[in-house]
Image (cartoon, rainbow, N blue to C red; front, top):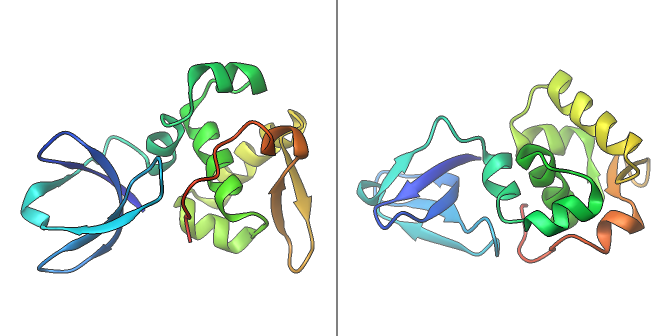
Length: 140
């Protein structure tokens, strides 16, 4: 995923590129649609997890003790796809293994994420985090 900005100012997550249209997803709802690439601009300075994290209200972030947009974005990804295999999480977040491991460790210490081995090694939200986060849309 990469963040793109449409000519109307809307931000999306780029899912797939083609010459005639790009498949993008709304970071709030997960709704996908095709948009002409001439109307989109890649936003290299904005990581996809940060884009997703900005969809979480400041009150929710404060309530669960997470103020970082990247961490909030990872929690939303987990809320939409859990449980998720570790290898799939690396692919859908585009974080390197070290950065992802560090972020997951912080969230595990905070009681928001738990590891799982059913059906494969991966991660899921704890009940506390699950009750607070939006699950609309899909990141698959």
